[in-house]
Length: 351
Image (tube, one colour):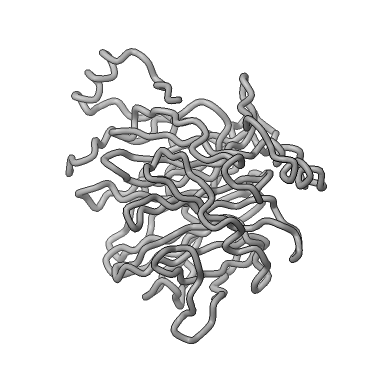
């Protein structure tokens, strides 16, 4: 079911034509985190983690007996038990957002039961593929890791594509969480992932359902930069590859985003420092971001989560959009967090 988050269609249409009303931060109501932003099928899409209940709890409709048994194991935080689905949001212009409920739910992945985090969606082979974290495994031998779901539409429903985790073990010390799928200019898709201060990159087969070796024969290549904690992300601009990640503790004010630059999707990378940090005038705990290139331009928007200044609970995170700017030498300027957000940019309009 879809519902329009902002009402007043006549006013909204007038503002869209005027092109002057920005998207105030947070961009949607509710507690969400780890947003991944894309352009699919003529709309902007954001896929976040469901971080905490708001005034009206949102829950999965049911769990199988096997899932119920999995949910009996000790969870690091109680909130992991309510994180069993993904909602998504779509927009024609970055300002007016529509909610799409439960585009993925554990009812459609028999092995996943809780701690459903950080979706990454990519269009391929005429379908949409979603990589996701599940079950917060703490050691090899536990069921969970990074899964893969597929849908005919960007708004789902996404259903398990392989019947098991794609990556279900620790490699190079990386907890299998926080996937990000990146397609290089030659069509090769890479998957970046990893928690516990280790970052790996793997090459995916054309059907995205298995891992294939790198040129040197390795499967799991570690590319951990200094300070890395989690939330890896990659973009390419003018032949330069930007590896980005989150640092600090996700429940604390030190959560932040840093980046490195390199000549290829696998590096080598040169660390360049932080670009997104807390601002005690705006919000704390800013991190786990993604970036979108506005179609037809060299303008970029960063999507991220942040915690209101008056909130102490770690899960109380909100979604925000701000501009991300480059210097003439290709380095990234520090992101300025705002309450005003970004200006409307309808799909197909170049500026």
